[in-house]
Length: 92
Image (tube, rainbow, N blue to C red; front, top):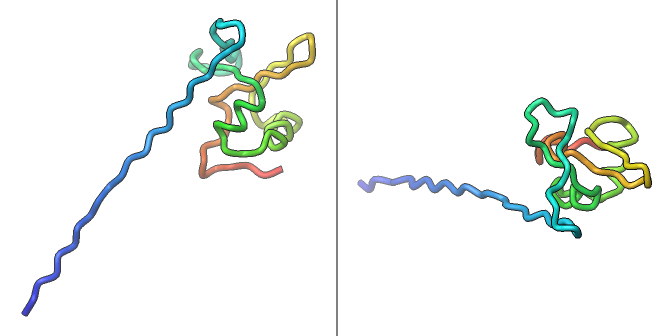
C-alpha cells in the first residue's frame, strides 16, 4: 500500500513599471481620484501598463470610462488608477 502526497507551490508575480518623462519632472496627479496619488501618463504608456493597444485606451477615453486630462495643445494624459484590472478588461 503506497501513500500519495500532494505538493502545492504558490508563485507571486509583481510588476514594476518605471515611467520617465522627457523633462525629468514628476508626472501630474489625477484630480478626479480621491486618493491623490494616481499619476497621469501618455496613452501609449497607459496601454503598456493595461496590456492593451493604444487604440483601446483612446476608445475608453471617448466613452468616458477612464480618467483623463487634455492639455491645451491636444495631448492626453491618462490616469493609471482608473484603468481596469487585468481580469476586468473592458471592450470597445
